[in-house]
Image 1: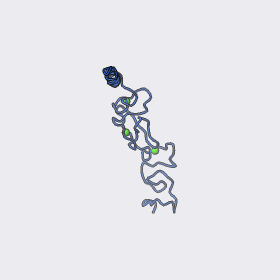
Image 2: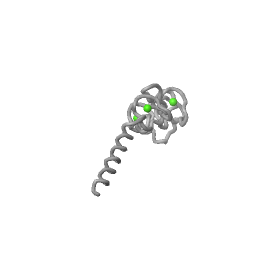
Image 3: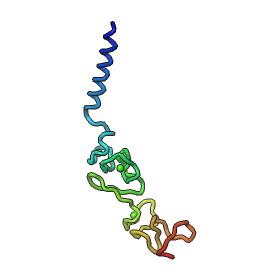
Image 4: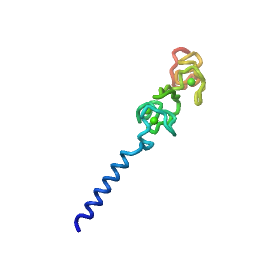
Length: 114
Ligand SMILES: [Ca+2]
Ligand SMILES: [Ca+2]
Ligand SMILES: [Ca+2]
């Protein structure tokens, strides 16, 4: 009886292939440019640090809109968002470009404030 283990191996391979070729799992839906269930964003990739991470969740400090999602950092958009002390759409006399209030000695050089 040497054929039995061989057949079960073939059956195993068939099951794996048919499963992979069936309906897309959550992993495959992220990166298809469409907002699917459970996704906060989909920028067409599964790369993090661009606003929409590898599991299609919006990253901290970013806002994403549309399909495929266009992600922009919330700092610098001119409106005060969560985690920002100020936002003047960039560097101003009272706000650093990283959306923290201008403080002398905070390690952030602000050429506008001098
Ligand atoms: Ca998707
Ligand atoms: Ca991404
Ligand atoms: Ca902002």
